[in-house]
Image (cartoon, rainbow, N blue to C red; front, side, top):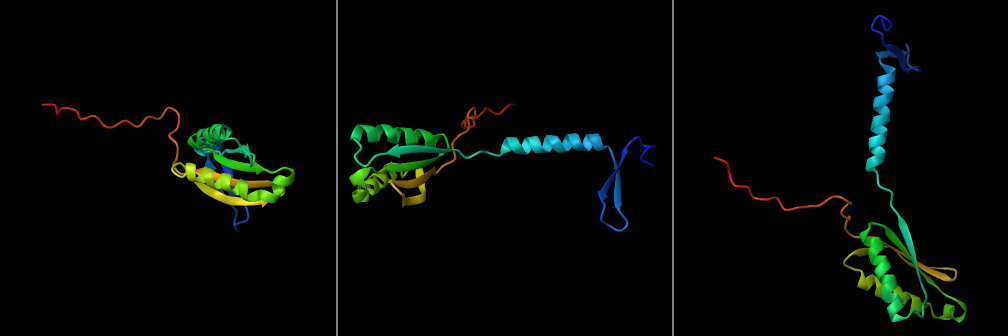
Length: 152
């Protein structure tokens, strides 16, 4: 029957009793499956994690510059891993690093949410923050609908 129709005989369920076969155009089936997989890959988004490093004795201007980088990363839709690096005797004053992280969270509370609270990891204190809103994709512009005059 498959040869008469110029199609393929494809075994669908080999373990069934009796085995189940289907008459179909296998080349067309593979092509359509590949197209569906390609579309699915286009729609999925890869979540990026950017890292920014601070020191406990950071200058106010340096803090503002690094905060600007964090804002840029968050508005681009990436998560940000904030690391405070302690050296030597700074390990005795980890509360200074905690204050910096708390200040950063307070400054960014409109655009970011804490995903992983600050935790000490050896000589580093690490926190992960994520954007609150989904960013507008490149090329997408949301315009207000224009009111058109009714045609008579």
